[in-house]
Image (cartoon, rainbow, N blue to C red; front, side):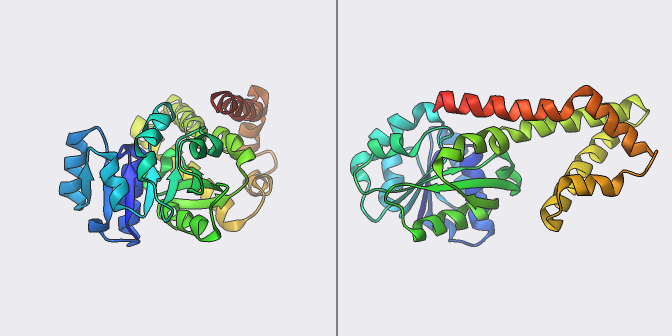
Length: 265
């Protein structure tokens, strides 16, 4: 599989590294283009991939094309490569908030297109990516996208009308969790823990709790009850969270982010 990445920034680089780590293809079969020449030189030197400042070079050499660019420039990028897209190409877009319709309107008819919403955790290969198929995409196209994004975490498939909700929950969600980790650490510091220890304790606690949800399949409420002894320390903390409206605040954050994703789309 020859894979081309238009955009080699944070997401693009994470995907390149994930693909190589998973041995999905060789470095000499990966092509990347970007405006940052210095960054391209680093990727070529460190990973051995092919790099260019020309998006057309990437398209002409690849079978799968990953559009890892910001939504503000996606239309310009699509117009620049439109005439080079062939029927055998698979185009995968990770441009946040950009609907399939918009991308297909700027590419030749019958283009095989898949839209993906990953999150920033792909940089540590712990992402969750939502995948939906364009009007001409085949099951094989979706499988290829799942394989590529599976190299940096978990994947789910869903209809496009739910992608804004995905953006609000898992796309924006890491920022919400970072605030929770910081707040937990601040609480530990308040009670006398050194800052570095408090941060490690908080981060690993969140990681461990998330792993329990994913690996056991148990409802978070049931897992919470496992830790919450009668008249113990945890129930006192749970009551404080309820008094401060933490659950309502988290729900409101996801809903607000989802609404903004719809507006941008």
